[in-house]
Image 1: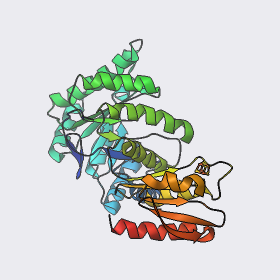
Image 2 (image 1 turned 135 degrees about the horizontal axis):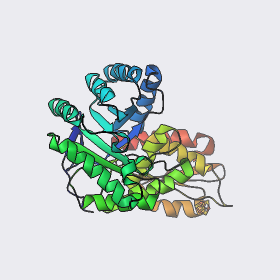
Image 3 (image 1 turned 30 degrees about the vertical axis):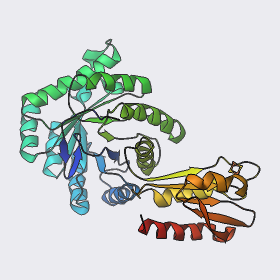
Image 4 (image 1 turned 180 degrees about the vertical axis):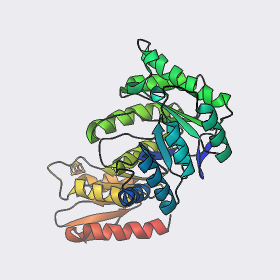
Length: 349
Ligand code: SF4
C-alpha cells in the first residue's frame, strides 16, 4: 500500500511522518505526580514495544514531576497540556519533546505566538489534537466531520503563521465511522503527519474491534503516521493492539501467532499457550509464524506453513520446525521446550 506523503517531524530521536516507520504511542494512566508509578508504567510500555509515551500535565505539580520523569528515564516524553499556555511553557522548561494542545479547550489563540517561538527555538513539535467530545462551542450545529477538520486546521494555521512547521494533527471521534470520515477529509487538505486512533474506544473487547476497524481502515488507505489505540484497560494492551494492527497490515515486522479455536479433539491448553507465546514474542521484530494447534489430526498439517509450531497430543505433543516434526515432548514440559526452541531459532533468523 502506498503511504500518504506527509512532512516529517521529530520527537527527540523518534520521527513521525515522511518515510519514518509508523510509531506506536500510549499515554500513562498513573498520576503524573506519582513519579515512581509513572516510571514503572513507562518501563512496561517500553518492554511491550511502545515508541512514544505521553503524560498528562494538568497542573504545576505535574509539570514539575514531568521534569523529574524526563531526567530519570532519558526518554523523549510528550506533555499533554490541552489548553494552558503556562503549563505548556513549564513542560517545555522541564524537557517535554512534544506538546499536545486541544484547540477545543483553548479559549483564545493569542498566546500561540510566544509558544510557537519557543517551540521553534527548541525544535519541539506540537500535536493539535481535536476530539469530537470537546469541540469549541463555535462549531456547534455544524456537520461533525467538517467541524473536526476545520477546528484542527484553524489551530494549525495559527501555529504556522508564527513560524511553526513541526505540527502533527490528530482528529479523533468515539464513533468509528465519523473518525474515519474526518481523517479522510483532512488528508485531502494538508500534509501534516497524522496521529490516528479511535478515541474512547471502550473496554478491551469492544475497544479492540473498534480500533482494528477504525485504525486499520485508515492505515490500509495509507493514512496515519503514528497510532494510539485508546482502551479502558491496562496500558500495555494498547501497545499490543497497535502492534497487532500494524503487523496484520504488513506495516511492521513481527511474530504472528496463529492458534486453533479448539474443539472436542483438543488435547492441550491452546488458549493458555497462545497467550503465553504472544507475551514472549510481543517485542520481537523478526518475521516469524508460530502455530499452536490442539490436536495431531489437524495440527501437523495446519502447522505446515509455520516456522515453528505445536501440535497437541494426549500425553505428548509435537514441536514443528519449518512445518516438519522436530521433536515429541511430554505435555508437562511443552512450554519450557517450546521456549528453548524459540530461543534457538531466533538466533538463526
Ligand atoms: S486443530 Fe485440532 S483441536 Fe484445533 S480446532 Fe482443529 S481439529 Fe480441533
